[in-house]
Image 1 (spheres, rainbow, N blue to C red):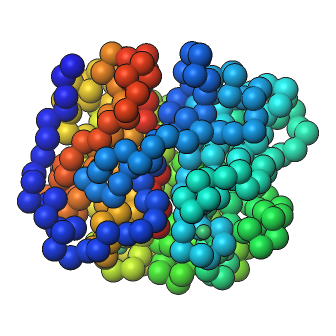
Image 2 (cartoon, rainbow, N blue to C red):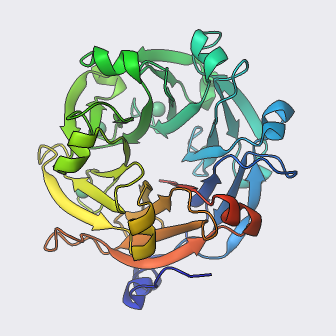
Length: 378
Ligand SMILES: [Ca+2]
Ligand SMILES: [Ca+2]
Ligand SMILES: [Ca+2]
Ligand SMILES: [Ca+2]
Protein backbone atom coordinates (compact mmCIF):
# COMPACT_ATOMS: atom_id res chain seq x y z
CA UNK A 1 0.00 0.00 0.00
CA UNK A 2 1.30 3.40 -0.95
CA UNK A 3 0.75 5.86 1.82
CA UNK A 4 0.46 9.56 1.08
CA UNK A 5 3.50 11.53 2.09
CA UNK A 6 3.65 12.91 5.61
CA UNK A 7 4.24 16.56 6.31
CA UNK A 8 5.70 18.92 8.73
CA UNK A 9 6.05 17.74 12.29
CA UNK A 10 6.50 21.27 13.60
CA UNK A 11 2.79 21.92 13.21
CA UNK A 12 1.99 18.97 15.41
CA UNK A 13 3.61 20.88 18.28
CA UNK A 14 1.16 23.79 18.08
CA UNK A 15 -1.66 21.97 19.82
CA UNK A 16 0.61 20.73 22.57
CA UNK A 17 1.91 24.19 23.33
CA UNK A 18 -1.23 26.27 23.13
CA UNK A 19 -4.26 24.08 23.58
CA UNK A 20 -5.82 21.68 25.99
CA UNK A 21 -7.45 18.49 24.77
CA UNK A 22 -11.09 19.18 24.07
CA UNK A 23 -13.33 16.77 25.89
CA UNK A 24 -15.90 16.43 23.15
CA UNK A 25 -16.27 14.71 19.83
CA UNK A 26 -14.54 16.89 17.26
CA UNK A 27 -13.66 14.76 14.25
CA UNK A 28 -15.70 12.02 12.61
CA UNK A 29 -15.53 10.62 9.10
CA UNK A 30 -18.45 9.17 7.16
CA UNK A 31 -18.37 6.52 4.43
CA UNK A 32 -19.95 6.09 1.00
CA UNK A 33 -22.28 3.24 0.15
CA UNK A 34 -20.72 -0.20 0.46
CA UNK A 35 -22.98 -3.16 -0.03
CA UNK A 36 -21.48 -5.98 1.96
CA UNK A 37 -22.67 -8.17 4.82
CA UNK A 38 -21.91 -5.53 7.47
CA UNK A 39 -24.62 -3.25 6.06
CA UNK A 40 -24.29 0.50 5.56
CA UNK A 41 -24.41 3.81 7.37
CA UNK A 42 -21.04 3.69 9.12
CA UNK A 43 -18.85 6.50 10.44
CA UNK A 44 -15.66 6.47 12.50
CA UNK A 45 -14.70 8.81 15.33
CA UNK A 46 -11.16 10.05 15.90
CA UNK A 47 -9.30 11.72 18.74
CA UNK A 48 -8.35 15.34 18.04
CA UNK A 49 -5.44 16.17 15.74
CA UNK A 50 -3.32 15.13 13.89
CA UNK A 51 -5.92 12.76 13.69
CA UNK A 52 -5.38 10.67 16.77
CA UNK A 53 -6.43 7.07 17.36
CA UNK A 54 -9.82 5.76 16.40
CA UNK A 55 -12.45 6.18 19.11
CA UNK A 56 -14.64 3.60 17.42
CA UNK A 57 -17.34 3.17 14.83
CA UNK A 58 -21.01 4.09 14.95
CA UNK A 59 -23.74 3.87 12.37
CA UNK A 60 -27.22 4.76 11.23
CA UNK A 61 -29.53 2.86 13.60
CA UNK A 62 -33.18 1.83 13.82
CA UNK A 63 -33.62 1.82 10.05
CA UNK A 64 -32.97 -1.73 8.84
CA UNK A 65 -34.22 -1.04 5.33
CA UNK A 66 -31.50 1.57 4.93
CA UNK A 67 -28.74 -0.34 6.71
CA UNK A 68 -29.45 -3.43 4.64
CA UNK A 69 -29.26 -1.36 1.46
CA UNK A 70 -25.58 -0.65 2.22
CA UNK A 71 -26.07 3.11 1.98
CA UNK A 72 -23.41 5.51 3.22
CA UNK A 73 -23.39 8.11 5.99
CA UNK A 74 -22.85 11.87 5.63
CA UNK A 75 -22.48 12.92 9.25
CA UNK A 76 -22.22 16.44 10.62
CA UNK A 77 -21.36 17.39 14.21
CA UNK A 78 -23.88 19.75 15.79
CA UNK A 79 -24.75 21.18 19.20
CA UNK A 80 -28.52 21.12 19.21
CA UNK A 81 -29.02 21.53 22.97
CA UNK A 82 -26.29 23.91 24.20
CA UNK A 83 -24.78 21.34 26.59
CA UNK A 84 -21.27 21.71 25.18
CA UNK A 85 -21.28 18.20 23.70
CA UNK A 86 -21.70 17.47 20.02
CA UNK A 87 -24.65 15.55 18.66
CA UNK A 88 -24.50 13.97 15.20
CA UNK A 89 -26.91 14.51 12.30
CA UNK A 90 -26.52 11.95 9.53
CA UNK A 91 -27.47 12.45 5.90
CA UNK A 92 -28.42 9.34 3.96
CA UNK A 93 -27.88 8.21 0.39
CA UNK A 94 -30.66 7.77 -2.10
CA UNK A 95 -33.45 5.40 -1.02
CA UNK A 96 -36.24 5.68 -3.59
CA UNK A 97 -39.63 5.12 -2.05
CA UNK A 98 -38.53 5.90 1.50
CA UNK A 99 -36.07 8.75 1.15
CA UNK A 100 -35.60 12.14 2.72
CA UNK A 101 -34.53 11.05 6.20
CA UNK A 102 -31.90 12.55 8.49
CA UNK A 103 -31.08 10.72 11.71
CA UNK A 104 -30.05 12.65 14.80
CA UNK A 105 -27.93 10.85 17.36
CA UNK A 106 -27.19 12.08 20.87
CA UNK A 107 -23.64 12.81 22.02
CA UNK A 108 -20.83 10.63 23.31
CA UNK A 109 -22.19 10.62 26.88
CA UNK A 110 -25.06 8.36 25.78
CA UNK A 111 -23.04 6.35 23.30
CA UNK A 112 -24.66 8.22 20.40
CA UNK A 113 -28.11 6.95 21.20
CA UNK A 114 -30.87 7.59 18.67
CA UNK A 115 -32.54 10.94 19.35
CA UNK A 116 -34.81 11.73 16.41
CA UNK A 117 -35.64 11.29 12.75
CA UNK A 118 -36.22 14.39 10.67
CA UNK A 119 -37.68 14.18 7.18
CA UNK A 120 -36.76 16.51 4.35
CA UNK A 121 -39.66 17.44 2.03
CA UNK A 122 -41.94 14.77 3.44
CA UNK A 123 -43.98 12.82 0.90
CA UNK A 124 -42.82 14.55 -2.24
CA UNK A 125 -41.75 13.24 -5.62
CA UNK A 126 -38.18 13.87 -4.49
CA UNK A 127 -38.56 11.49 -1.55
CA UNK A 128 -39.89 8.74 -3.78
CA UNK A 129 -37.42 9.27 -6.64
CA UNK A 130 -34.17 9.94 -4.80
CA UNK A 131 -34.40 11.07 -1.20
CA UNK A 132 -30.69 11.65 -0.60
CA UNK A 133 -30.12 14.14 2.24
CA UNK A 134 -27.28 16.58 2.84
CA UNK A 135 -27.49 18.01 6.36
CA UNK A 136 -25.58 20.92 7.87
CA UNK A 137 -25.95 22.67 11.19
CA UNK A 138 -25.25 25.97 12.82
CA UNK A 139 -26.83 28.66 14.94
CA UNK A 140 -28.88 30.75 12.51
CA UNK A 141 -30.72 32.72 15.23
CA UNK A 142 -27.94 33.33 17.75
CA UNK A 143 -29.55 31.55 20.72
CA UNK A 144 -26.55 29.30 21.30
CA UNK A 145 -28.14 26.15 19.88
CA UNK A 146 -27.72 24.79 16.38
CA UNK A 147 -30.50 24.58 13.87
CA UNK A 148 -30.46 21.90 11.17
CA UNK A 149 -30.38 22.80 7.47
CA UNK A 150 -31.00 20.00 4.97
CA UNK A 151 -30.32 20.03 1.24
CA UNK A 152 -30.74 17.26 -1.28
CA UNK A 153 -29.20 15.56 -4.28
CA UNK A 154 -30.14 15.90 -7.96
CA UNK A 155 -33.85 16.58 -8.39
CA UNK A 156 -34.19 18.50 -5.12
CA UNK A 157 -34.62 21.87 -6.91
CA UNK A 158 -32.08 23.69 -4.65
CA UNK A 159 -34.62 23.54 -1.84
CA UNK A 160 -33.14 23.86 1.64
CA UNK A 161 -35.30 22.99 4.62
CA UNK A 162 -34.51 24.51 8.00
CA UNK A 163 -35.40 22.76 11.26
CA UNK A 164 -35.23 24.13 14.80
CA UNK A 165 -32.93 22.86 17.56
CA UNK A 166 -33.64 20.10 20.11
CA UNK A 167 -35.84 22.27 22.38
CA UNK A 168 -38.72 22.01 19.88
CA UNK A 169 -37.86 18.48 18.74
CA UNK A 170 -36.47 19.81 15.48
CA UNK A 171 -39.67 21.49 14.33
CA UNK A 172 -39.84 22.72 10.74
CA UNK A 173 -38.96 26.42 10.51
CA UNK A 174 -38.53 27.44 6.90
CA UNK A 175 -37.67 26.65 3.28
CA UNK A 176 -35.19 28.43 1.06
CA UNK A 177 -34.68 28.25 -2.73
CA UNK A 178 -32.04 29.67 -5.04
CA UNK A 179 -34.47 31.54 -7.28
CA UNK A 180 -31.81 33.45 -9.19
CA UNK A 181 -30.95 30.39 -11.27
CA UNK A 182 -34.08 28.66 -12.44
CA UNK A 183 -32.14 26.75 -15.13
CA UNK A 184 -29.99 25.02 -12.52
CA UNK A 185 -32.94 24.53 -10.21
CA UNK A 186 -34.84 22.66 -12.92
CA UNK A 187 -32.07 20.61 -14.51
CA UNK A 188 -29.97 19.54 -11.50
CA UNK A 189 -30.91 21.28 -8.28
CA UNK A 190 -28.56 19.45 -5.89
CA UNK A 191 -27.10 21.39 -2.97
CA UNK A 192 -24.36 20.97 -0.37
CA UNK A 193 -25.05 23.40 2.47
CA UNK A 194 -22.72 24.36 5.32
CA UNK A 195 -23.22 26.97 8.03
CA UNK A 196 -20.71 29.72 8.66
CA UNK A 197 -20.44 32.98 10.51
CA UNK A 198 -18.90 34.98 7.69
CA UNK A 199 -19.60 38.39 9.27
CA UNK A 200 -18.75 37.68 12.91
CA UNK A 201 -22.16 38.54 14.43
CA UNK A 202 -22.48 35.14 16.18
CA UNK A 203 -25.25 34.03 13.88
CA UNK A 204 -24.55 31.59 11.07
CA UNK A 205 -25.11 32.24 7.41
CA UNK A 206 -25.92 29.43 4.96
CA UNK A 207 -23.23 28.74 2.37
CA UNK A 208 -24.63 26.47 -0.31
CA UNK A 209 -22.50 24.44 -2.68
CA UNK A 210 -24.01 23.52 -6.05
CA UNK A 211 -23.66 20.47 -8.27
CA UNK A 212 -22.27 20.32 -11.77
CA UNK A 213 -23.95 22.46 -14.39
CA UNK A 214 -23.40 23.52 -17.96
CA UNK A 215 -20.45 25.35 -19.41
CA UNK A 216 -19.45 28.58 -17.70
CA UNK A 217 -21.63 27.99 -14.67
CA UNK A 218 -19.25 25.79 -12.67
CA UNK A 219 -17.52 26.37 -9.36
CA UNK A 220 -20.25 28.32 -7.62
CA UNK A 221 -21.66 28.74 -4.10
CA UNK A 222 -24.56 30.88 -2.91
CA UNK A 223 -24.54 32.63 0.48
CA UNK A 224 -27.76 33.30 2.42
CA UNK A 225 -27.96 35.51 5.50
CA UNK A 226 -29.00 34.25 8.96
CA UNK A 227 -32.57 33.69 10.21
CA UNK A 228 -32.95 37.19 11.66
CA UNK A 229 -32.34 38.55 8.16
CA UNK A 230 -34.77 35.99 6.72
CA UNK A 231 -32.13 34.03 4.80
CA UNK A 232 -31.86 36.81 2.26
CA UNK A 233 -29.53 35.91 -0.64
CA UNK A 234 -26.34 37.90 0.04
CA UNK A 235 -24.12 36.93 -2.86
CA UNK A 236 -22.97 34.16 -5.14
CA UNK A 237 -19.28 33.28 -5.40
CA UNK A 238 -17.59 31.65 -8.34
CA UNK A 239 -14.14 30.09 -8.51
CA UNK A 240 -11.35 32.00 -10.24
CA UNK A 241 -10.34 28.71 -11.92
CA UNK A 242 -11.35 29.14 -15.55
CA UNK A 243 -11.43 25.42 -16.36
CA UNK A 244 -13.74 24.63 -13.43
CA UNK A 245 -16.09 27.42 -14.50
CA UNK A 246 -16.07 26.22 -18.09
CA UNK A 247 -16.55 22.55 -17.26
CA UNK A 248 -19.43 23.30 -14.93
CA UNK A 249 -17.69 21.70 -11.94
CA UNK A 250 -19.67 21.19 -8.72
CA UNK A 251 -18.58 22.57 -5.34
CA UNK A 252 -18.35 21.27 -1.75
CA UNK A 253 -17.85 24.22 0.56
CA UNK A 254 -16.57 24.28 4.11
CA UNK A 255 -15.86 27.24 6.31
CA UNK A 256 -13.90 28.13 9.37
CA UNK A 257 -11.93 30.94 10.95
CA UNK A 258 -8.55 30.09 9.44
CA UNK A 259 -6.87 33.34 10.54
CA UNK A 260 -8.44 33.70 14.00
CA UNK A 261 -10.16 37.07 13.49
CA UNK A 262 -13.62 35.76 14.48
CA UNK A 263 -15.01 35.67 10.92
CA UNK A 264 -15.22 32.53 8.81
CA UNK A 265 -13.35 32.08 5.59
CA UNK A 266 -14.87 29.81 2.92
CA UNK A 267 -13.05 26.79 1.49
CA UNK A 268 -14.32 25.54 -1.88
CA UNK A 269 -13.68 21.88 -2.68
CA UNK A 270 -14.54 20.50 -6.11
CA UNK A 271 -15.83 17.37 -7.83
CA UNK A 272 -13.91 14.57 -9.58
CA UNK A 273 -11.03 15.44 -11.88
CA UNK A 274 -10.00 18.65 -10.12
CA UNK A 275 -6.48 17.55 -9.10
CA UNK A 276 -6.80 18.02 -5.35
CA UNK A 277 -7.12 21.81 -5.47
CA UNK A 278 -9.30 23.82 -3.07
CA UNK A 279 -9.87 27.56 -3.37
CA UNK A 280 -10.17 29.77 -0.27
CA UNK A 281 -12.26 32.94 -0.11
CA UNK A 282 -12.14 35.65 2.54
CA UNK A 283 -14.90 36.58 5.02
CA UNK A 284 -17.81 38.96 4.36
CA UNK A 285 -15.98 42.06 5.64
CA UNK A 286 -13.34 41.42 2.96
CA UNK A 287 -16.18 40.92 0.42
CA UNK A 288 -15.25 37.24 0.02
CA UNK A 289 -12.20 38.13 -2.05
CA UNK A 290 -10.36 35.04 -3.34
CA UNK A 291 -7.28 34.54 -1.13
CA UNK A 292 -5.62 31.65 -2.92
CA UNK A 293 -5.39 27.87 -2.90
CA UNK A 294 -4.43 24.81 -1.00
CA UNK A 295 -3.87 21.35 -2.42
CA UNK A 296 -4.04 17.77 -1.25
CA UNK A 297 -0.43 16.70 -0.66
CA UNK A 298 -0.66 13.37 -2.47
CA UNK A 299 0.40 13.55 -6.11
CA UNK A 300 -0.85 10.12 -7.20
CA UNK A 301 -4.34 10.85 -5.88
CA UNK A 302 -4.39 14.32 -7.41
CA UNK A 303 -3.38 12.97 -10.81
CA UNK A 304 -5.87 10.12 -10.72
CA UNK A 305 -8.92 11.61 -9.07
CA UNK A 306 -8.55 14.87 -7.20
CA UNK A 307 -12.08 15.21 -5.79
CA UNK A 308 -12.25 16.77 -2.30
CA UNK A 309 -14.71 16.95 0.62
CA UNK A 310 -13.42 19.66 2.99
CA UNK A 311 -14.42 20.34 6.61
CA UNK A 312 -13.11 23.02 8.96
CA UNK A 313 -13.01 23.60 12.69
CA UNK A 314 -10.72 24.32 15.59
CA UNK A 315 -9.88 20.75 16.48
CA UNK A 316 -6.79 21.43 18.62
CA UNK A 317 -8.28 24.42 20.42
CA UNK A 318 -5.60 26.91 19.38
CA UNK A 319 -8.07 29.63 18.32
CA UNK A 320 -7.79 29.07 14.56
CA UNK A 321 -9.51 26.51 12.38
CA UNK A 322 -7.78 23.55 10.82
CA UNK A 323 -8.81 22.04 7.49
CA UNK A 324 -9.65 18.35 7.10
CA UNK A 325 -9.88 17.15 3.50
CA UNK A 326 -11.86 14.04 2.67
CA UNK A 327 -11.16 12.31 -0.64
CA UNK A 328 -13.34 10.71 -3.28
CA UNK A 329 -13.42 7.03 -4.15
CA UNK A 330 -9.93 5.64 -4.74
CA UNK A 331 -10.24 1.85 -4.90
CA UNK A 332 -7.37 -0.27 -3.59
CA UNK A 333 -5.86 2.62 -1.61
CA UNK A 334 -8.81 4.56 -0.25
CA UNK A 335 -9.88 5.61 3.23
CA UNK A 336 -7.42 8.48 3.60
CA UNK A 337 -8.11 12.04 4.74
CA UNK A 338 -5.62 14.87 5.21
CA UNK A 339 -5.41 17.46 7.96
CA UNK A 340 -3.88 20.83 7.10
CA UNK A 341 -2.94 23.71 9.39
CA UNK A 342 -0.78 26.84 9.56
CA UNK A 343 -2.81 29.17 7.33
CA UNK A 344 -0.43 31.74 5.79
CA UNK A 345 -1.66 34.39 3.36
CA UNK A 346 1.84 35.03 1.99
CA UNK A 347 1.74 31.80 -0.06
CA UNK A 348 -1.44 31.93 -2.18
CA UNK A 349 -0.57 28.71 -4.03
CA UNK A 350 -0.47 26.68 -0.81
CA UNK A 351 -2.18 28.60 2.00
CA UNK A 352 -2.10 25.68 4.44
CA UNK A 353 0.45 22.95 5.16
CA UNK A 354 0.05 19.23 5.60
CA UNK A 355 -0.14 18.31 9.26
CA UNK A 356 -0.83 14.62 8.96
CA UNK A 357 -2.89 11.91 7.30
CA UNK A 358 -5.58 9.80 8.88
CA UNK A 359 -7.17 6.63 7.57
CA UNK A 360 -10.36 4.73 8.17
CA UNK A 361 -9.76 1.51 10.05
CA UNK A 362 -11.73 -0.68 7.63
CA UNK A 363 -9.64 -2.56 5.11
CA UNK A 364 -12.45 -3.95 2.96
CA UNK A 365 -14.06 -0.54 2.51
CA UNK A 366 -10.74 1.12 1.72
CA UNK A 367 -10.11 -1.49 -0.97
CA UNK A 368 -13.58 -1.20 -2.45
CA UNK A 369 -13.98 2.60 -2.56
CA UNK A 370 -12.59 4.41 0.44
CA UNK A 371 -14.30 7.78 -0.07
CA UNK A 372 -14.09 9.85 3.14
CA UNK A 373 -16.59 12.46 4.35
CA UNK A 374 -15.12 14.28 7.37
CA UNK A 375 -16.97 16.61 9.74
CA UNK A 376 -15.47 18.76 12.47
CA UNK A 377 -17.32 19.99 15.55
CA UNK A 378 -17.24 23.64 16.44
CA1 LIG B 1 -25.08 19.05 22.69
CA1 LIG C 1 -30.15 28.56 17.28
CA1 LIG D 1 -23.22 35.83 10.84
CA1 LIG E 1 -11.27 34.66 9.70
